[in-house]
Structures are given as C-alpha cells and as structure tokens.
Image 1 (cartoon, rainbow, N blue to C red):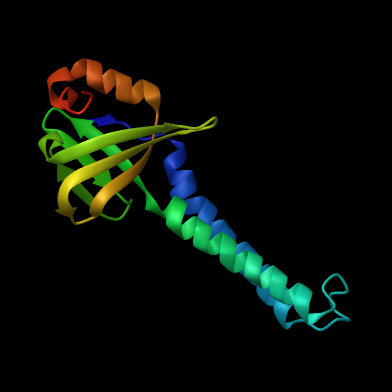
Image 2 (image 1 turned 135 degrees about the vertical axis):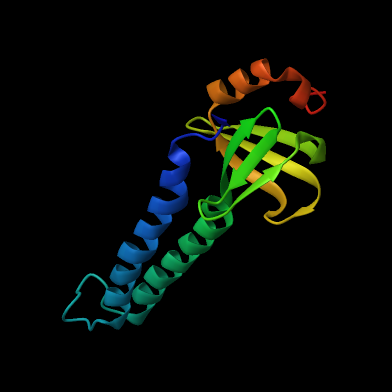
Length: 148
C-alpha cells in the first residue's frame, strides 16, 4: 500500500485544531470572564466580544477547512480514505472527478464520488505530488479515466 497524503495531514488534522481550541479557548475564556483590573488590555465589553468573535470565526474556519482533510492510501485494488479514526476502501471506478488545487505551501486534491459514501460525496486530501505521481506511474490503468 502506498501513502498518497502528505506527512503534514496529521499535523493539520489533529494537532492544529486541538491546539487552537484548547489554548485559544482557555485564553478566550480568561479574557471574557476577567474584570478590567485583571486584564487591562481588554477593559471594555466590546473588545472582549471582538476577541470572542475572532475565536468563534477561526473555529468555524478550522471546522469547514482543516477538519475536512482526509488521509489517502492506495494500492492495486483501489484507495483507502481515513479520518484517523475510521478507514474505508473505495474503487477508482466509483470516482466521478478529481480536481487539484496547487497552493504555494501545499497541494490539495478533491475527489468527487459518483454516489454518497460513508464519509460523504467528496474528500479533500492534502497530497504529496511525488507520492501521487509514483502511484499513477505504477498503476496507470486505474486512474487513466480520471485524467481525461
């Protein structure tokens, strides 16, 4: 079995959200529930609500972007999608489309399935281009219908 996902997937999927919600959640609770003598940096109600709003806004952003990342492994019989708690096996014949988004620091692959699966209709994978290229060279017949 070959790994397609980048090593950073586990960092973005598990560590970063945990750090954000624990550390920033405690800091936000401290700022919101403290009085103006304890924290002179946030003395009025408006600045505390702005801080709380930023925490909630970034929490929602993390949920709808980073939480959607999946780990992908593949072999000759298909590919495996995991959220680090459950793993499901799928066939490339069930894939409707694969789209790529190359950003400066990482590359995303969006796999759209033909029907709804246990993990949804599409998957976002933070992939490493070298791993994906090696897999396509090793098993060209499996993914050739997707590259057209």
